[in-house]
Amino acid sequence: MKWSVGISLMIAAVVAALPSTALGKGASEATITGPGLSDPVSLAGEGQPGGAALMQIAEAAGFFPAVFTQIPDPMRDERPTGALGPKYTVTYVMPGPNNEADQLLQDIYPYASPSPVSYVEPGQRFWTTEQTRGGWFGGTATLKDLLVAAGLPESPPQPGRPSEFPWRIAAPLTLLFAAAAFGVGVALLMRRRPQTA
Image (cartoon, rainbow, N blue to C red; front, side, top):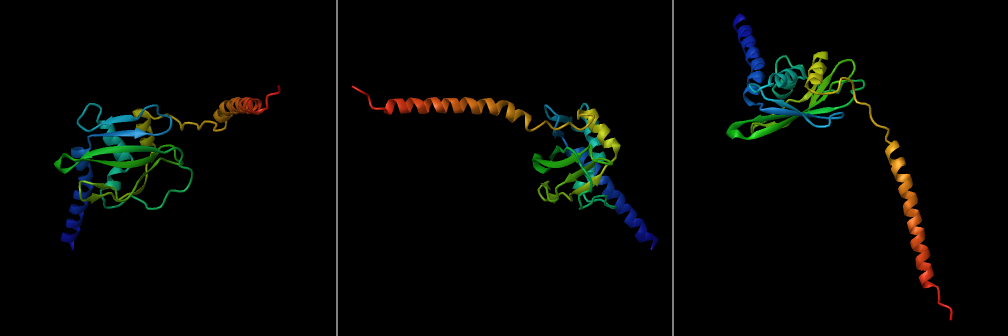
């Protein structure tokens, strides 16, 4: 009995250590895109200058259990309740066998209430035969702090007023086109009028 418990603990420890090792060997970079960013945020891989941020964000966002099955499994299949706020997408570049790079996508909601959450689509293929476990992961305030330090806004960007731009531009353009159409119509009518002797 003690022997089987010991074996189970050793297996769990090896599985838990696998993702860090795998990402440390493979993740060469990542980019973050989303609202409020004029350009994508670039993150260097571990071992490169500034590469520690990528590992910290990946760990805080639950990237490892979302990609590699872990025991215990912190991932959830159901979407969290409540407002999630703006979505940001992290694209991880992971070179695999034969130097073929795979891209894995993770959506992060840093401003979700009460705490940040992330989502990885199940079944994303990588390293030829592997697939992501996927699901939802509940993060902590640390995740938001790390993302803000990397370049995300401190607070969620406010959506613009969608009606403001079209009405300012469209109304004058509509009047201009209407006047032009009226002018063309008058010109055509004048050309078709019979000439009087």
